[in-house]
Image (cartoon, rainbow, N blue to C red; front, top):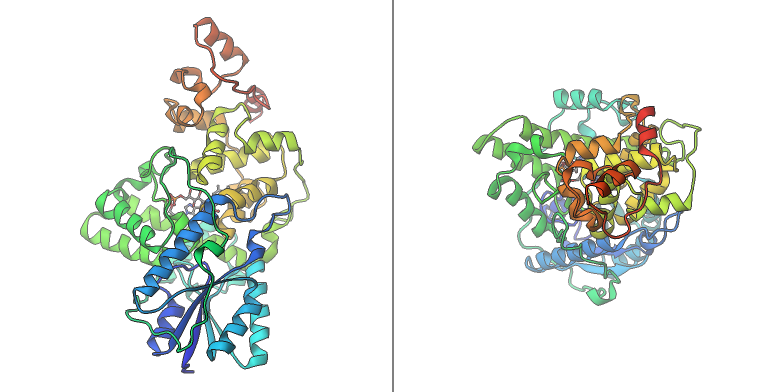
Length: 475
Ligand SMILES: Cc1cc2nc3c(=O)[nH]c(=O)nc-3n(C[C@H](O)[C@H](O)[C@H](O)COP(=O)(O)OP(=O)(O)OC[C@H]3O[C@@H](n4cnc5c(N)ncnc54)[C@H](O)[C@@H]3O)c2cc1C
C-alpha cells in the first residue's frame, strides 16, 4: 500500500545506508518523519543491579544519534528524538502528523518484541499499520535454507548450509533528498536526552566514536587505508592496538554499520586486493553473529534462564567478594585482571579476553554465569543482546552445542597470547617492572624467586583469589 506520510522509527539501525525501511519509504515518494525514542526501560537496572546501559554505550548512542540527525538534516530531513515508551509516543506522533504507517526494523529478543506487540495493538485501534523489516543479519531470515524452528544446534552445520544454499542480498541504496511532512513536532534537544556517558581511557584500543560516519570510516580504514584485512586470521587473537581485529562490533551493535555493507566491501577487497583465508574469516565471524541472532529467535527467553539453552540444573554461586574481585580486575590472576580493567576503563575487550574472563568466572570461581553476562551487558560499548548472552551460554557450557564446552586455562592462555607480558604491563601498573618470565604468575613461589632476584611487585597487586596451580593440575 502506498502511504502519503510514513513515520520511520529508528531502533538499533542508526544509519542511512542499507536501511530497508528507509529505502522503502523513500522509494514510495512518501513524506518521512524519522524518530528515535529513548526508552527509560533500557536505562534502568539489571536484575543484579548494574546500569542496563553503562556510560560507554550511553555516550556511543548519543554520538550515533547526533550523527544520524546531522546526516538526515543534510538531506532536508531531521531526526525527532523523544523520551518515553514507543508504544505510547509513536501512535500519538502518527496521529499528529497524519502518518498512515510506521516502518521499522524487527528485533528478536523479548523486551524489544513486547514493545513491537504493544505498539501494533495501539496502532491497530487507529487504523495505522506497522511494517517491520528484517535487517540486522548478513543472511536474511527468509533466505535461510531451513525454518528458524529447525535451525541446527551446531554452528558448523548452520554455517555450511547457509554458505551452500543461501546468498547475501545486495545492500539497499542510500536515499538522496528526503521530504518531511508539513507539520513536524519538536523533539528533545540533545541536552535533554540524558545520555551523558563517558569517553574511554586513553589506553583504549580505539576512541570508539559513535555514528554511521565513524563506522564507515573505520571500515574504510581497516580494509583500504590500513590494508589489515589481508592478515586478519593471523592477528585476530591479539590484545593490544586498534588493528589486530576489525573493531566493527560497536557500530554493528547499534546498526551504524550494516553487515551486508561490510560483506560488499570485503567482496570488493577480494577483487581489488587479495582473497585469502583472512578475508573469508571476517565473513565467518559475521556468520557467528548471525547464528546467535537466529538462535535467540529460535530459543526465546531460554537464552537468559539460569540453566541456559540446555536447561542445565547445576547453579553457580553468587559470592559478592569473588564477583567484585573479577569485576574490578583484582583477582590476582594477571591475564584476567588486565582484561577486566580494560573493560572497566574502556567498555571494550578482545574476543580472546572475553572467552578467558568468562571461562574464569564460571569454571575457576564457580560463580553464576549471569553475573558476568549482566556486567558485560552494562559495560560493553558493543553490547548486543544475542551475541552477548549467546556467547555466555557457550562459555558457561549451557549453550546448544556441546563441542563448545571448553575450559580455558587462563595462565597458559595469557602466556600464549601475551608472551612478553606487554598487554599485562599496559593495564596493570603494579606489574610494570616485571620481566616477561614470571609476569603471568606472580604467585607465592614466583614472588619469592622474584624477590630473591631483587624484583619486587609495585603497588598492592592482590594475591590470587583461587590457586591456579591447583586449577591447572585439575584441568
Ligand atoms: C562472553 C562473550 C561475550 C560477548 N559479547 C558480545 C557482545 O555483547 N557484542 C558483540 O558484538 N560481540 C560479543 N562477543 C563476541 C566477540 O568477542 C566480539 O564480537 C569481538 O570481540 C568484537 O571485536 P571486533 O569487532 O574487532 O571483532 P572481529 O574479530 O573483527 O570480528 C568481526 C565481527 O564478527 C562478529 N563476531 C566476531 N566474533 C564473534 C562471536 N564470538 N560471536 C558473535 N559475533 C562475533 C562481530 O560482529 C565482530 O564485530 C562476545 C564474546 C564472548 C566470548
